[in-house]
Image 1: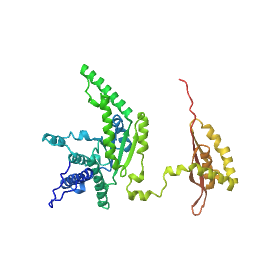
Image 2 (image 1 turned 30 degrees about the vertical axis):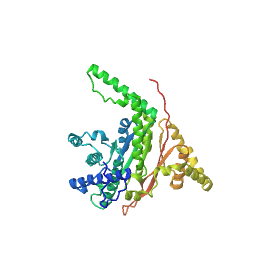
Image 3 (image 1 turned 180 degrees about the horizontal axis):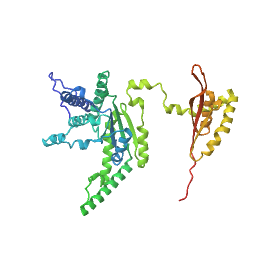
Image 4 (image 1 turned 90 degrees about the vertical axis):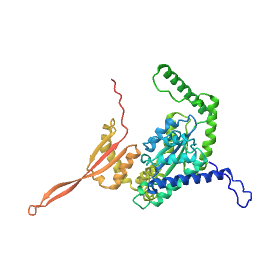
Length: 407
């Protein structure tokens, strides 16, 4: 959609507008029209878009169809991806075509927004094939701004759960030109053979045969269009949204490992800022684990230099009381020891014991079981005097032995 240059009433020659300026202005007009229609039809409080949008793009043959279900699994999404080309075959789009209209940017935006408002997509949606044009890119920016505005507007109201912190990911599955052409032609050959067999046998369903999958020059041209259009359209979004460039050149397992690495959970991104602020002072398991070995070494050296006598007592206790039992459980990799040794009454001794086992490659867990044991009774009052019996229950876990048994 392009505007004609306005006529100047003072007959001065208007300065031609840049192509980019026209597109951005068009995007504002398109978005405003679509948004106003939605607000009038369903009400502002019902403009509840998905919390998470994943814009899935990919080079021809990069494996979008193969990896989309895996991306859904990684992100915990349950609804099938919204394929824009299929969305434009809906009754709404067909009505536009039937009266001779074109499904332009405004129609695409209107149909897509209405689809996204369906309750099924409340947690998130994958968009396959959007955005394709600069106008659609600008409309996406405006949508994100509106979603953020609605979040602030309803933040302290009962509707707050319906307007969560929005997240938008851009995922581009990439293969180089040579690999893309090879995959397109291989896919074309497989579809051709499949359809040939269906036609000859009459069994099965015909698959779509793409010209670009049958001719090398067409496959190369399709790849060129992808690079020119996709990267140009998405370039301005890289600084705003989370951009994931996935190397899809390798095997399926390698590609899926790359996807997991890119989409791993990040609380600072996914949680509402207010929720994140409540949790941010608590360290993550990863942060603790990074320096765990250095801290273990520091503590063990500290025991030897500052508590040598207690350190030696714990070592002897392990050697005499625990290791014989551990050795008898070398196959299972689990040993359970109960001890009433008074050495364990010292909390530092317990810490030393756990650290020694950690250094040796074991996982040690100690808990205290307290029992009240009757010792005497006052015959006049009937009061029973008890002593507290402490039983230290020690669990030692490690990788057990695998014994190969013949059949």
